[in-house]
Image 1 (cartoon, rainbow, N blue to C red):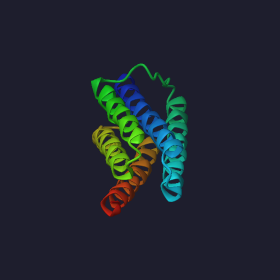
Image 2 (image 1 turned 90 degrees about the vertical axis):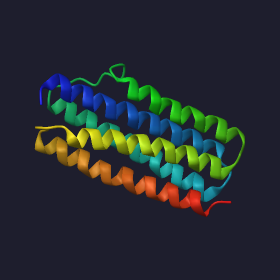
Image 3 (image 1 turned 135 degrees about the vertical axis):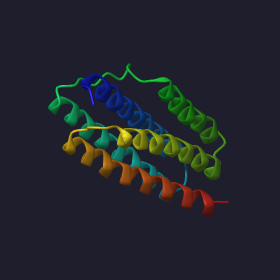
Image 4 (image 1 turned 180 degrees about the horizontal axis):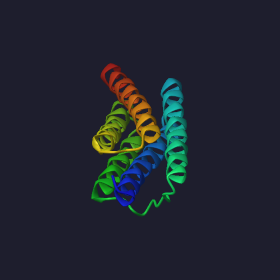
Length: 150
């Protein structure tokens, strides 16, 4: 895979992760349920850590993070988390969890796209695979919380 394509792919992941981090941080601040606050805090921190890992990989590969270099998919992700703000104002936990799950769906797709890329350096591929597992776990947790909320 050529460097430019790898860079675009990784920038896409970074933007997706930062959107998720911001979305969870907003959700954490605005929900009243203490256990949801903890869950959102955990995933905001997880995403921050993932951003650092991806950026470290980019520096090792001599690629430079450029948050402005995302594709149109990125704007969709951003919209998914924007809808979260509307759900938060309603103070409806189920609505908030719905929007979080939608954000997670986009994150999963971004990781699936990244993992389909050919010829990724093995260190990078293993970081992406590990993060993908974490994103899937977050998605499943959020979905279970949504399904159990009234």
